Image (cartoon, rainbow, N blue to C red):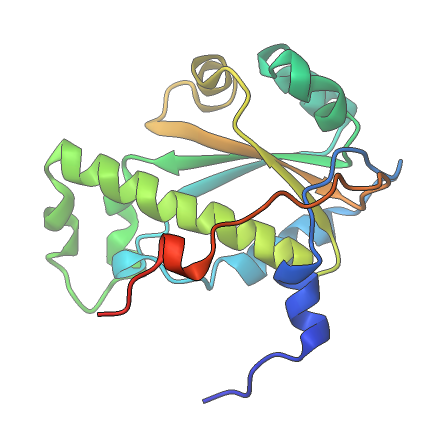
Length: 195
C-alpha cells in the first residue's frame, strides 16, 4: 500500500482548496486539458463503465455557445475562466463495454434496462466529474463547479443527436479572487456511522 499523502498534498486537494469565482486572464494550451483527462480517466467506475463525456470550452466562440444557458448568478464568473467544462453522462455507455470491460462479454447486457443504465450513467458520470476536480487541483489548477444552468439548453447545444445528458459545469484555470470564508461542514457524528 502507498504511503499517505503529505499535508501539502492534502491541503492542495481538499483542506485549503476552494471553489473559485474569478480567474486569471490566460490561455492554457490544449495539452493541459489532454493531461487532465489522462489523469482523471483512471478514477474507478463500476465495471469500468466510464460514462462521463467532457466538452472543454476554451475558445471565445466555444464559451459563447454556453453563455445563454448559464444562470444570471453564474454567468460572469464562468465566462471569465480559461476553460469551461460541460460534464455529461452517456446513456449509451454500455456500447463501449467490450473495450472497457473485455474480460466479461456479457457486461453490456447488464444495462439493457433503461432505468439501470440511467442510474449507472449518472452515478458514475458524477464520480468522474469529481475526479476532474481533484485531478485539476492535483495538476495545479483551480475549479469552480456549478449546477446553475439550463440543462435542456446545454443538451441541445452540445449533445444533440446523442444520448448524452449534461450533469454539471466546471470552470477551470488559476483563480484570481480571494475566496469567501469557508462554509461549515457536518461533523463526523452528524454525517457518519460506524457499525
